[in-house]
Length: 323
Image (cartoon, rainbow, N blue to C red; front, side, top):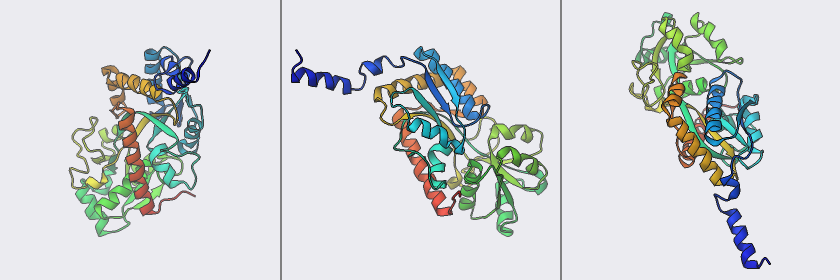
């Protein structure tokens, strides 16, 4: 016979983190939802983490690309999906820090609709110029831009892209303005014009720009991270050059839907942190030009909320809106 006391005890046990459902997680394959196309850094990191989860937790974790709306389709899928850890989103700077402020409507709340799991990695932006500009330093760039406002052209991979927002931070910190040109088809279309000096500078992924830097086709001036990039250790940070306000990062992290059992979130977080600390995994992340992190759900949540607030303030102040 079930008494009121025994029923209450059963219900209390079910509500506690670490109940039977969490202890048995995962009991079936898990989908890792990737917001961008195969071959991109987001995709590579997602597949790396999916394999680590499969090895650690004994069930297949399968990466699935859901592209569109600059990551919004994938983010919405997970935000509105099951709250049982059966879907994990590889969220990014775009999906969880900048897009919600740039677009008039996003079909998810970047903070309230997700439970953070871990920050996989961060990536700085590399400021490069065409050597034909004659600009050899950040100081020279600032002087040229100040002397002839709007005469220096800055190329980006699109309105609100990481390249665009890095350029905006630089302008604000340095007190200058560029003639900013947005390439609607993405960053790959920037490079030919940059190499021909039809546009003068850009901020971009260090790994993507590294071959052209090594060949002398582009000149690196600075990185946007707080510390120097391991790919280009001789290139200073903007903070070192007197522009700490221009420091910024792109990043990749794992999220599940809000309302997922905290014990499941903790299990996923522990497994991810353990994987990222492994030398071979950390080394693979560094090969992509990224810095491995692997922090706790609480730490990642604090980081994401700070990024969301910071970029919201910048985007609103600059009036950056996508139609």
